[in-house]
Length: 102
Image 1 (spheres, rainbow, N blue to C red):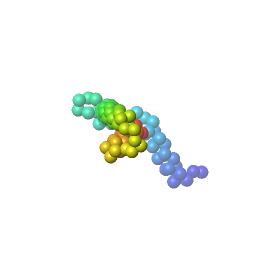
Image 2 (image 1 turned 90 degrees about the vertical axis):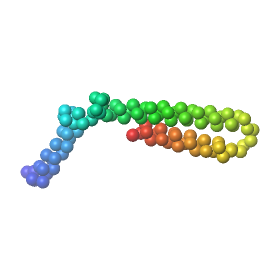
Image 3 (image 1 turned 45 degrees about the vertical axis):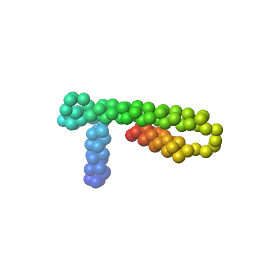
Image 4 (image 1 turned 120 degrees about the vertical axis):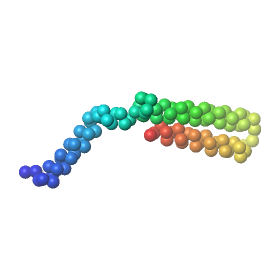
């Protein structure tokens, strides 16, 4: 015999699993749309894509500037400006990776 507590647990588990499998209701779907009719998730993805492209452009710009400065100088010494650009490159790369992992 299955105890009452176990039956209750199994019923709750089945309900939770069905809630994850079943498609969203009309009310839930309307809540996810913006006033202009687009899906909120699509708008977020488009915005994230724009930010990724802007960060990628800045990343390319900084890396090209560092390359030019390295070719210009024959020394093994890095200027403070170049160190700041290298730090900015690291920040951009981390931000892009973090955005991608969401």
